[in-house]
Length: 176
Image (cartoon, rainbow, N blue to C red; front, side, top):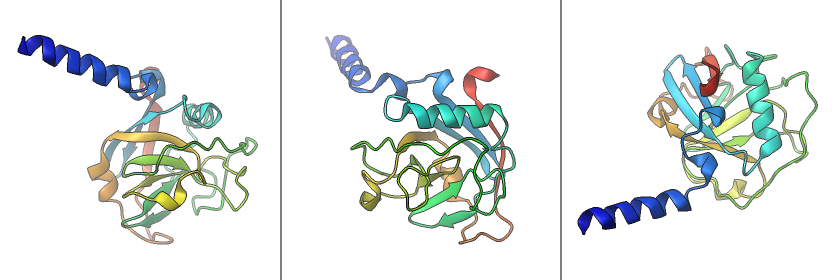
């Protein structure tokens, strides 16, 4: 009886979790940083164009050696400027149209950075340290950290960061 209830509870939890949030190597981003490994489950069900861009840039090795150029304790850590490294650069690809959802920005949520124009996201992304309801519906959610938030917590702070921590390599888990 207990085993049946446990199985039913597990099955219900899996059904309630979006397929993309379950282990999916095609949509798992692995960031080997100077502080350790961060694993992000990408969410193409929420932002298919943005997730495709992150995967494309990862495969182009654009994110390799990119700094965490803006790290604000209690708020977020931003990276993804593989062009200039100072937060002003983007990729050679065109900017993306916003894919806003009602998904809330909570600890570990990954969003696309952008300029004032909602349709200006390109390559940079950020990881939230805490709930950030003021970002809800204003920035595109692309994923969630599933392991390594302790690593994100250790990133050197600054705005800009002097001698920043970096993404040594970024890889899609399925590409090993």
